[in-house]
Amino acid sequence: QVQLVESGGGLVQAGGSLRLSCAASGRTTNGYTMGWFRQAPGKEREFVATIRWSDGSTYYANSVKGRFTISRDNAKNTVYLLVNSLKPEDTAVYYCAADPKSTIAFLTLQTSYRYWGQGTQVTVSS
View 1 (cartoon, rainbow, N blue to C red):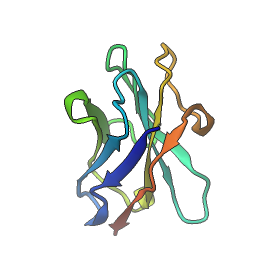
View 2 (cartoon, rainbow, N blue to C red; view 1 turned 135 degrees about the vertical axis):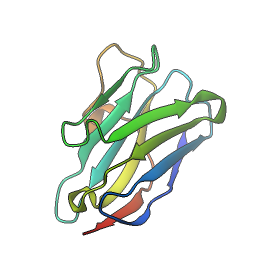
View 3 (cartoon, rainbow, N blue to C red; view 1 turned 180 degrees about the vertical axis):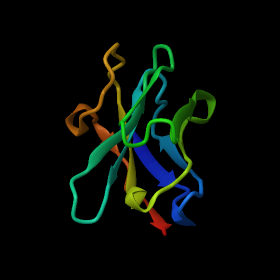
View 4 (tube, one colour; view 1 turned 60 degrees about the vertical axis):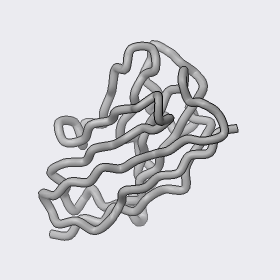
């Protein structure tokens, strides 16, 4: 069993930055695919970014490409999401997800992930 705890969210002005963290416990996430999703008020949860275990390759939703960066520190069992150039439409609860599958394909569907964190709120003011 893997427990995921997100942190780093907050209130920030448009154009600002945050670094979200997701700390895993219970067992190592080495070999796991890690991802970030978000859910804005009144909307469905959507894919944001994922990082592949095998080679560290990353994949992003078009809406965040060039602004967000996902990374992982395997020694710390932690994955990060650096969010830059924030826009009001980035306001959402951001969720970390993990799955023991290590595949060539990038995992972008919620149903592909077994473990989820409780989320961290990011609010961007205009």
